[in-house]
Image (cartoon, rainbow, N blue to C red):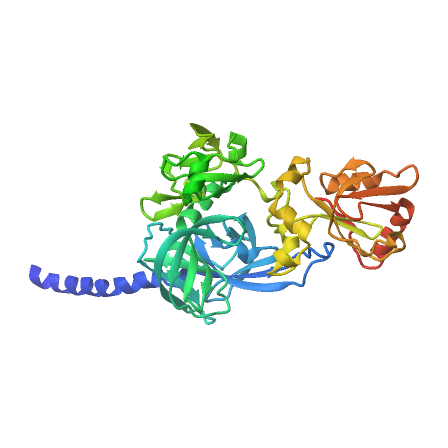
Length: 497
């Protein structure tokens, strides 16, 4: 047989492989091959009746399969979860899941099967992570039909920005995209890919405007890298509130009329990175980590263009790293080195969020005391800033004077149950506690300690910062009523941790 005749079948085979290769690659990149369904049961705590929990509610989404049988989802998918389950998109094989890493500020979580003997990952391909996304590019949002078939929808990247995920005041890098998505029952969390690689997780979608926000892969990669070392520290925050310096009169007032750019430090988070480094209210910051900051608070990113300076801290640095801030203080230039830290929700006077833990409270003789949290205020609905008690809303917006008094948390009388011990006090609510039996109350544990000791005359003296200023409750009667409250349905009289 001649060499020429031998080459014919080889060419034919090569042609067949050439035809099959794109199909195989497409199959590998199919949503049904790299996603799992995530089923969750959530049960939120009640903040108006802190001893209770709400009714269980189901939630269903899609998770991206990663190396090591890990599944990436948004933290919002499993907030206050009592049960989590992974489900194969085609076979329907299921297994209980556990959270092995979570960050509510970054809105990311990693799940793993509770039992290694699982068929959930059979035939599934882990996704690689790609972070080269630019404005104008086309990405794919992946979904899965009820029958297990994959669905891919094209979306266009409109711009790269910095915005809020779902925690108030917590902003990160964000892809703004446009495209028409179909609603499906498992669409709470949707992976976003480019060329078969994971580039983000869909956070929100407006069907009216057909726009969506995508949590981008640079944040995902930083989250996973932090988890991998076994000592998760999270994303740092600078801890300042700032004002723009666009107004010429304001620039002259601050002595920066001959300078370019800069942001005015309006307030400081007590115990935050900037506060610990000695940054002061009234400072004007001109550069962070060597990057000039303009009058709006933006810097120029080499790939994304104008971005908020917050990305220099939350997107390009780690907890424990030191960065330099160039600033002007009282018209004098100076450089301050800041060691970046992360201020946890529990470190604030008023917790900005509370997940997977209940509100702290204490009931004494029918008086219901709590530590103020933002979720408590949000219990008044979307218009909570005008509907919730004014003094508590004001305290949330202006915590510094209260912190300067030495308070660690803001303890207040939230409501009064009608009991023999509270006659005449039924109308009192939403007043901040200052002292009990002469002891200044810094947190709910101080309150419990103050009530634990019986006064000589048997009456506890409770002082407030506002009307009625002082009330008195009988110790013996209150303790008897506590026992009755347990018998009549209040299962727990306190939660101090």
